Length: 216
Length: 216
Image 1 (cartoon, one colour):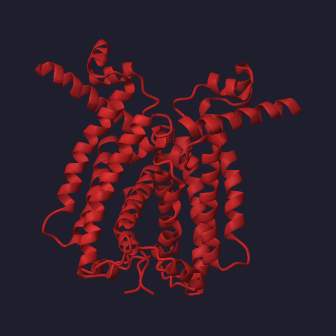
Image 2 (image 1 turned 90 degrees about the vertical axis):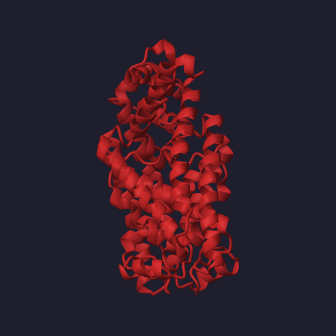
């Protein structure tokens, strides 16, 4: 049993690295097994199909990322401070990825959304659920900031969607230009999108002179 | 000669549709030729490789899109009015695509950025050039709005990058959720990112009650 679950883990881990590096469609089952150091015959013992593997990779990655998102977005700190931590954590994760494999790998969910959503309904549905959960988490923080009159948004859910969309867009460019500095505008842009009333937290950024912020 | 250039066009057009539908990696040359109604042997008469075809598809699509972007972003109208037209044109193009093939196909350049940029340097370089040109076009309009004191940004280039990133992020979600209504926040978000001083153009949107706008 120990060795069995080990083989499944190895396949998942190899598949995630290869998908981040080269996308899903370009991969074959044989190549994944070779990278995992697992005999090809055992693949179908663990996964019904390559699509089932993709879904497992997505779930595994989301389990990690959800833990991180919940950790940075909840707690005692002021809501805008917690939102800022989300962008810092995103930047740190992309920098770590770039150090380990030479290129910015971007967001696995964004990558697979663009590559797979129009030809695999199961993957599309799962990715929709994950992004809905991300929006839930960001929305809760925005609602809290709204209750404290630190942001001015009419619809916290719409605002949360726009913050997550901005995150995906900037991560796309960080990947294309292989440059994590592309992520620096995330925080000031988030403040601008939220019509942030610039409490202490925002004031520091304003003083640092970034563009695009609403006048305070 | 007439038939020759016709075959090249057919291959390009079939390849673009198939790439939009299923991505690049999943496609084979034989399938592209079959969809184009062109004998497989003639493919390598026109294209050195599948990568060369991808580059030609990208160039062809950018030639069309650049014409559209230049048309909507230049002219006599006020700069913010022209920027707004860009989002309207984007929404119209995505709606037309959805009508013709059933699903929102997203942005070909964004799709290929996420799918190919980390394993094809030639494609990465070409896509970087195209997004730089998009940012140039948007930057010029923002600089004009800045000269009229209609926006408050410290760095028009950074601001233009953020507007284009927001566009890519929202288009990604329109594709994932197969719903062009996801594009509705583009314009109010653009105003928020630009710290727009809400001239006549912005005032109409403010009155329509969208969130995320800076207080005027």
